[in-house]
Image (cartoon, rainbow, N blue to C red; front, side, top):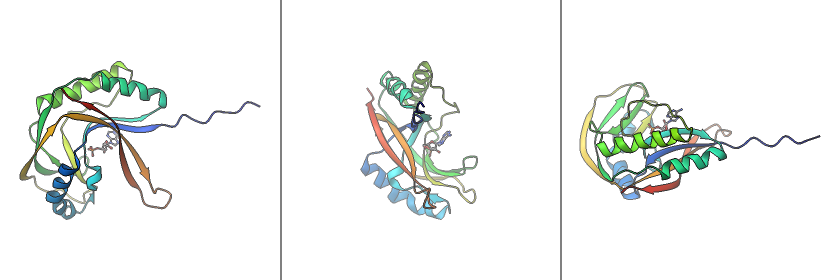
Length: 185
Ligand code: 3AM
C-alpha cells in the first residue's frame, strides 16, 4: 500500500512596513488610551504594521515566487506621516492613518502587486489606503481625530508571517514574524 504524503503546509503571509521598536513604542504611548477607549480589541504594539499587500496562504512552492517577486520590486524611500485616528466602519477597526498616500508608497504597492501577478500570485485589489490598525471589532463608530504627526522615514519593506496560537485553549492570539526585509533605494 502506498503512503499518502502529508499535505504541503501552508503559510499565511503579507507584505508590510514594519516600524522600528522606538517608533512602535511612541505610537503605543500616544494611542493606547484612544485604543482602549474605543471598546475594541486593542492590537498589541508588537503587532503594529502597515500592510502593503495581503498575500494569504501559500505553499512552500509558491514561497519562492513570493520572495522573487519582492526581490524584483524596486522603489524609493519615502516619509510616511501618520497624523489621524479614525474608525473604519466596513472593517470595524480603529486605525492610525493619513489623508495623503505618498506617491512612492503607492508605486511600491503597485509594483509589488504587479510582480506577484507575474509569478501567478493574484491578490485581491482594493483602493490602497495606508493605515496601522490600533483596535479591532469596535462596538461603535467614532469621529476622526487629528493627532501630533508621526514622521516615519521608511527605508525598507518586509514579508511577514501571521500565525494564530491558543485556538485549542479557547483564546486566539495572532503572532507576526518578519521573514525577510528589502531595502528601498
Ligand atoms: O493591516 P490590517 O490590520 O488592516 O486584517 C488583516 C491585517 O490587516 C489583513 O491582513 C493584515 C495582516 O494580517 N487580512 C487578514 N485576512 C485577510 C484577507 N483574507 C486580510 N486582508 C485581506 N484579505
